[in-house]
Image 1 (cartoon, rainbow, N blue to C red):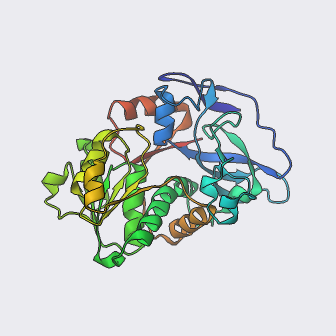
Image 2 (cartoon, one colour; image 1 turned 30 degrees about the horizontal axis):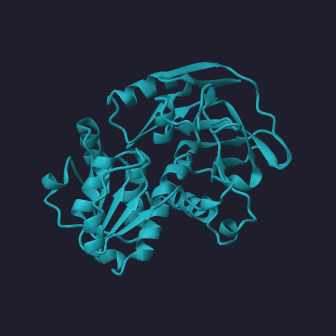
Length: 330
């Protein structure tokens, strides 16, 4: 089969690779598409020691079961595999299972390929009326859904009384904004510094305010800041703008340290919440929201061919992409 293989920093090759060999309890899936995630970009740049070359990246995927009693079933794939028996899993917090793993980390190859083997319990059926490329967005959208649910649980204000600011206009940030709206937060501002992307998001998602900076927005201090970027400068912005008693939900994994004003967080009782991926329940709930059309038509997403994936990564790196997400079609 063909796959887009990461062979070293800033190097991707579209080439023939061995077919996956499903084990007991797994399905072989003909992949329709797979989205490019920020974590794929980190690996592409050589910044993720967990993803050494050579490796097939990608984990945001959807396709059709190839064989067996469920052949022809259209599915979106939860790429996070947990043990199912530990304390975290028993509590429904399988995303923090100590033995969790995700496809696209050795020894498991990722979804930038024509086929993938995945255990059946990680598959969610996609209705016929939903395009598979939209179903593949369940994974990044679920990250925002999970973060918003955690933050709302911590808030002392009702969702419709909150103002939220999202840092970053990529798929995680847009997914967070759409999840905020779906879960009742009506006042949402998104900050995005890429001028091309900013212009497109303003056109494609008019229900939100988009600005290049918080100062430009003229926004009041938010009750909630979602950092969908995760670099020191965005954490610095988050701790500076959130109102006293407010919440920072931190999704982005840009860099590990720097940016937090711990003194202000302490003196103003600001809650900082790390938020990692999603639970299996969050994934199913997000898929259901996509299938209902709760998140709109996804005009902010761009489709490209998997065979042209190397160019897509290069364009993302150089800031030539105005879309919030690129989905690679097999």
